Length: 291
Ligand code: NAI
Image (cartoon, rainbow, N blue to C red; front, side, top):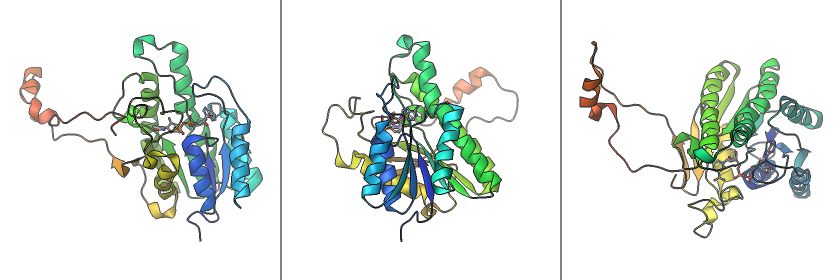
């Protein structure tokens, strides 16, 4: 018995890196998998339609079920075609993992409008474009489902040189929170993921480039945490972000202090005088590389 027997999963950006590891593990656990990938370099400047098919061939050779899709996640038509690939090949969809992504890191002053727009388009709009048709299909067919959206500690905590990427990833967090609330009445769980893995996306970033890759940071050792989120093992958990990295699996949460709450009109000076109540005690800052 596999954890995903009888389920159909769409995984975007699964022609390499983390998505490939999720696709292979999900297929091993019994899911029929749509492997989407536009292919191309890390900065999103081109395409390589062979990436998705290679992963499909490897899944099929290992006895699994998979179908390739090479659409661009960042277009409405692309999102619709990805769902169509699932329906044409497997007749349903139960799980969507929005994983596709690109990187155009630069300090903010050096970030062009084109870099900003493309990164936000692939990550944030790409998540919207893939979720919308799946959401409607689940809702219209009265089916429960699980949607996993890939955020990042770069958006949740911030990280130097990633203003475009961090903005998109924080936007995905907000999108996930809202949909998790709307999804409750339809039995659709929506979870956020903040992975940390050694892939082509991170191999030359601080924290990864200066050391040998830790085996626990390889995509195949991240995939079990994502399988947990996609499977019934996650029970009714929804609206939560799990950090999954070489450090294991943990929840990442938005928090607030008890604050300064005088219950009467107050001055800015009083806020300053009560700064110890307003702010959390200073703690070592978490960065994407340390998270
Ligand atoms: P990767 O670069 O190995 O994989 C991303 C895949 O997405 C590539 O195969 C690429 O061809 C595909 N892709 C890019 N644009 C696409 C588009 N428009 N349509 C369809 N496919 C497209 O990167 P990695 O590390 O596997 O990242 C996967 C996800 O995890 C991304 O969303 C990334 O932002 C996120 N992430 C990764 C972290 C890490 O430590 N590797 C840290 C935090 C977040």
